[in-house]
Length: 287
Ligand SMILES: Nc1nc2c(ncn2[C@@H]2O[C@H](COP(=O)(O)OP(=O)(O)OP(=O)(O)O)[C@@H](O)[C@H]2O)c(=O)[nH]1
Ligand SMILES: [Mg+2]
Image (tube, rainbow, N blue to C red):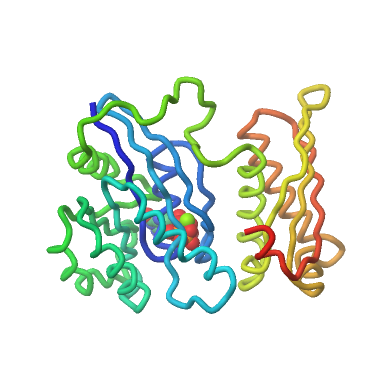
């Protein structure tokens, strides 16, 4: 059999987390239409008759590193590539033109002498397409594929390519007793991510970058009821107001969407107590 570590890298919003979830057939990494959704490398196991892959979904590398969130998450993606990686999947969103971000990532990838797969993602979208602007990259990669992570097109070819380049080796992680393919998240962290995802989806543009979510308690109550207590922590009073929304409508919407998804995932009834707190140093303390 074969096994190894496979990093998925690419610009923010190129579809890395969507791809990982759809390869696994299991949601492990949150996704949203806003860039910089993933904040830390998410590791998860894929397995079939050919062997075992430990996928690492990385935060998209951002060109501007002035804001505190990018300062924390940018180095994480680069650090992942310094760890032991057997294959790199570089996702390109062909619907957006090349820019400084893309150059930065290409620079990071170039330093690696491991097998590299270039995957043009979102091929379900025909126009706009900047594919010709990326063609020059193909010669630096061992293989080039076109995929749609969202619609699961050509993911089998992507997996074939990954297995082709993985070394012959036994299982890296014993997954016989694992409830999920996720490696580096416990249930508190996973639930906080689901809540953060809903905040990304419902809140206006800049706001998601100014918050984090902490789950303080998960307890099993009678009649299949799971009680979850969580806090959204944000940097300023005015953000708190926006997160709560008029007559509490926004926080209610975020909470309801998170609860529904968690109920489906756990097959439990869920009571989610969600509050909002201000802490100007949240990114130092909680990221
Ligand atoms: N049409 C189309 N949309 C896609 C595809 N893959 C992802 N998307 C959308 O692109 C957006 C970003 O997807 P994510 O998976 O969150 O992207 P990401 O690369 O993980 O982003 P960061 O974590 O911010 O770096 C979401 O709105 C996805 O639904 C695809 O194959 N086709
Ligand atoms: Mg992501």
